[in-house]
Structures are given as C-alpha cells and as structure tokens.
Image (cartoon, rainbow, N blue to C red; front, side, top):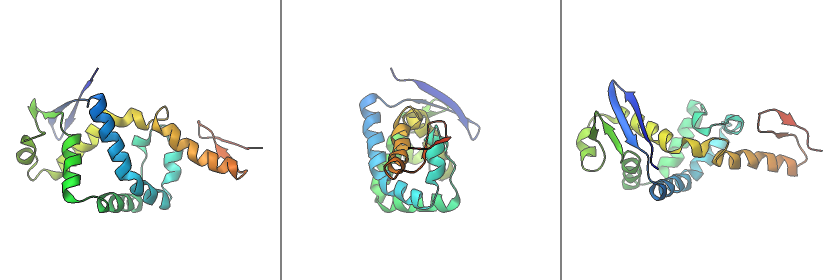
Amino acid sequence: MRKSAETTIEGRRWTLIQHGGIEGHRLLTGLMRLGGAAIEALAATGAAKNAMKADDLMEVEIGLDAFAALSKNLLGNLDDDDILKVVMEIVKHCKCDGEPVGGEAFDDFFAGEYVLLYRVVGWSLKENFAKAFQSSGIGDLFAAVPGAVKAAMGQTSPTRSGSTTQDG
C-alpha cells in the first residue's frame, strides 16, 4: 500500500504519495546504476568511511570535495534529457498546497525555483527510498563489502554497531 507524506518547504505545504512498487523499483535501480561511478568517486575522497559507519546512508554527511566528485561523476554520465527525466520521475507524485507539480505542471511551477526543486527532489528521494539505504536494506550490502575485504586480508573488520572486532 502506498503511503503518503507531508512536509513544509519554504513555507508551503508539500505532500506526496510514494511511488508504486514497480515504478519505485525501476527508479531505485536506475539511480543506483547511474550512481555507481559517482559512488566510486565519493569513495576516492575518503567520505566512504562515514558511509560505512552509518546505519542510514541517507543521513551521511559529506564534505564539499566529496560532493563535487559525486556531482561531477553523476552529472557527467548523463545528458540533460536523462537528468530531466529522472528529476521529473522523482517529483511525479508531489503536490504543493494541493496542486500537482509533476507532468505538465512541472515547467511552469519550477520556473526560476531551482533551489526549491532540488529541496523537493531530496525530500521525495528520502520519503521514497530512505528505508532501502538503512542498515536493514541496501546498507547491509555496503557494510558487508569492507568487512569481507578486510576479513580476506586478515585485518580488523567493522561490526554492525561501528565497533571493531579482530578477525582471527
């Protein structure tokens, strides 16, 4: 069953209905596919250490250098039409003060409101996909990777709580 969410952004009431299972799965896997190189660039900045300790990857804070690498790689792998399609898909089920902002309303509603647009995109992503990136979802896969590598090398590996254990 699709859930709804509500928030206030820039003094306006925003609501959304979550993406359906098929639609959400396609969007999530597409975002992960597109984000692979960006995540690799993020790891190269050293920001991956914070991500591996987090129970919720949507809450990981990154520095400006990591954000720049992430943006460059993510946006560099997409053409303008692909980026627009993804953004429009993300806000497809959002409403502002009861009025739809997706589809045909998108262009007029967000004209000159680009900061607002990305605040809404961020909120929609969080409402639709945050659970997938928590430690009980895809986060387990990310957390398992460094542990498996370190275990294979006979080094200390992180546990789920963030403490360390000695493999031996």
